[in-house]
Image (cartoon, rainbow over all chains, first blue to last red; front, side):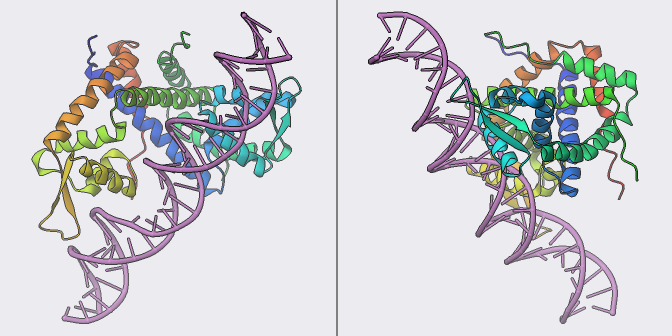
Length: 151
Length: 151
DNA sequence: TTCATATAGATGCAATTGCATCGACAAGGA
DNA sequence: TCCTTGTCGATGCAATTGCATCTATATGAA
């Protein structure tokens, strides 16, 4: 097994990708914090739950969607529940599980976060790249996604 | 002050950017861990110090370069020192500070990390995008960097 | 000098994360 | 039915992080 060496262009692209995305996320987190709002992860979960509608989602489905560790989701949901942003319902056909549903306050919180989050995206991406460039960027990034797990 | 709303293309690009970069970094961290190697942050510091040469760097210079919080760098350096990968030297013209220099073991560790890190970059970027596409990607990302602090 | 302010780096403490594992239930073969 | 194995979700504990602050030295005005 021979280890491969990356091209200078690959290294440069990697460095940019990692640094820029970290900066963008951090600045956005800062903006949320500055407005007394919770972290982006909360938005992600509330967003998925809002999309899921009345049926809600099982925690393990959420775990797939938000790319977090199982225990992270478990704890995040516990915090969201304490804050009344979600509710956990027992699920009839599987005694181990539960269904998680967004509450009215949860939807409200999602809106409030989006006001900042969306503005940050508009400012940091929308204002800097043309629609065409945004599409190109998304397309290039799309080719870097992991191949769906082979198993 | 009116909050801006991002275009669908900006949202899509943002989502891709955040998810893809997270995945790439996580998989790379996993690969390092699987080989019994320390996290990427260690590489970043060792890399900067290797580039800096014999003169070494002051911790605050390092803090600028690696985009970490001051206390993170302080603690990271403490761990690197315990492992003998760096050494701290008093600096003559500023009694508060110190100079940090990479050791031989530090260079060796840097090489070992790079064997995995570089391979990961080659595999995840180099093999998936042409040189031209890598350049395009880097260029688009470059336009998303923060404007140098206005102050 | 003397004092006020600023900068370098470290650290106590609380919150968060990661790892490993647990308890509970499910599914399916013997 | 019983037993083994697998999945769902929670959690104890150790390590790491974030925040605020501390000590020590530098800098510059008065």
